[in-house]
Length: 414
Ligand code: KG4
Ligand code: ZN
Image (cartoon, rainbow, N blue to C red; front, side, top):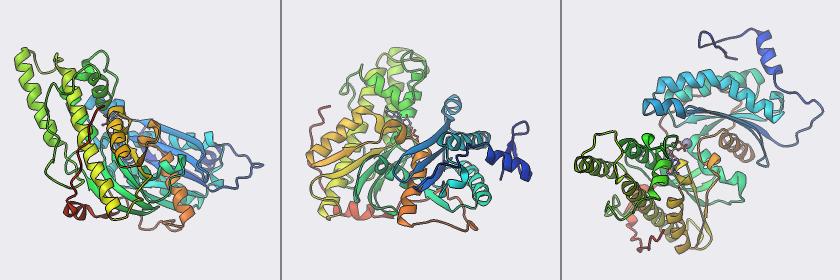
């Protein structure tokens, strides 16, 4: 087992006695009998160090998370070696906290599940090496987890959602539409060809200097845009939704970001203010960018629903659309998606915000799903590696584009 020497900031291999003390530091309840499968989930793929213990019925017995957002906000983005160092400093404490609040002794765990793909190499490496040491120490099976699959399946922890269902993942790092046919059976229908919507909203918020805005100083970029948009008019600026001619389910946000950049520069000139000061038209820009983003996401999702129904990949009525990721907490975007699901007789489901963003629960739950299905459980971890880049499922986005489905216009009255 690796332990952290706080003073030196490095991991070291402790003595047997130290390891024993670490394991004993969890609460042991010898009289307590767990009939369910219990999985410890560990997540370090990006900038959150998270762990949780979840049982077979979806009960979250313990969880802990350390977010690096505050540090990365100061540097204007994630610096991978900084993220790695922060994961190293926190992983042991976070895992220990999740285990001790769960009141499950490590020996009672059925398996340990850890994100191994995709993500930042340096971040994934910390979670994986810590987990492999723990697996070795406790002699437990190991379940390598695909981060996006875990996001997609989280809804099943809360709702009785049967396969197949459609999932839209929208966050700062993710943007994809996929059909979920089973625990490890995914069809990728479309993805962003450049950046994710949350990344674009963060860049626009930064360009508008919204951290200096008294009402938005502590908010993430996307949240600040949503907040300010309420005070603006969405049609004050006429931004065209991206990729209108491409009849596929892919997304793009870089073009929109550049158009907004230009408008901001032009407005700064008109208002005679310096870069870094807040424009009087900032709320109008926020409203317009939010509206355009919502329309773009809604249209691609609408096409994905029509494609799946046309190919009998989804039921004709009561099909489920799950929306997750940090951007899914945007109520304006959710409303746009509700218009789409109402028009297509689908049901829209969103996990609560704490399960939309990165967390240990979704990893532990994916471990439970895999245990139940008997999929991807390793009893020997030799050769296990992390994979920074890894697609989700089978990519059929080309076929979706070739179907060239025309999406009927919907009134986006939000
Ligand atoms: O899922 P998440 O916590 O982390 C990853 O990106 O993986 O998502 C964070 C992203 C950020 O880009 C943030 O600006 C965006 O989600 N976000 C929002 C809102 N809250 C967070 N975007 C739009 N509206 C919101 N209310
Ligand atoms: Zn994520």
